[in-house]
Length: 320
Image (cartoon, rainbow, N blue to C red):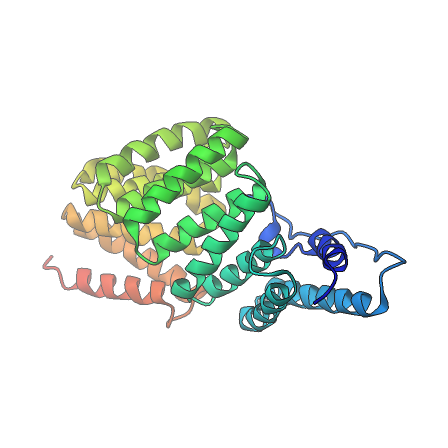
């Protein structure tokens, strides 16, 4: 058994340098650049070698994640987590960052069932070692809520997303971009639960704040408006939905542009709305416009292109 003081020394050293890709601020644009931590001069040679080995593994996992090589990062992180558990036990301050990063890697590979326990452990670990109001804790709680949504565990996802929104309000404020982003997530969960009236209320409130705080033509505002249009259509409020789509696409055709994937998605949904209103001629025009842009930008085999192609073919068969 290693002397407690030696293990504590190594744990303190690693905690300072254990920042992985999961440690960025809630809405950071740039990827994190952990500060270099100098090893103490009096560190025993064996311990110094072990610490350097861990730092190399952390750097390797970070590089793999930044390069999008999530399977490779997963392997490194699993080894790190096992090593930390062996050295410091199953309940130590080093684990949450690595568990959160592992959960992120698994989500990126579509392994959402495997990701859930890692993200839950990371959130609970940060709660214990950092506190409920710390950015890393909020980040992991948000990641868990999103993962539950992806698993289609809608009831639990709604519960956790509501909790995240309230936490964000307390820590950052009701109109902080991170808070607004999570209100959008909540509306998406409500919509998938088919609680469309609640989703509509949430989105209308969100759009008012987004337009004032962020701007009418900014991406979060446009996404919220697009989701509102879909929610209205799902409730059979086709005239209101159509108007929202028209307003949305006036902005999106200019920026991010007619061939941007988000624009293509909403143009497809606009064409669907027009079809439901039996405005077949205009629906075909919109679908054909979207299809041409999708083929040019995404290629013939992309799911968005195929969806637009099928819609065009169906509309072409409608009697004139």
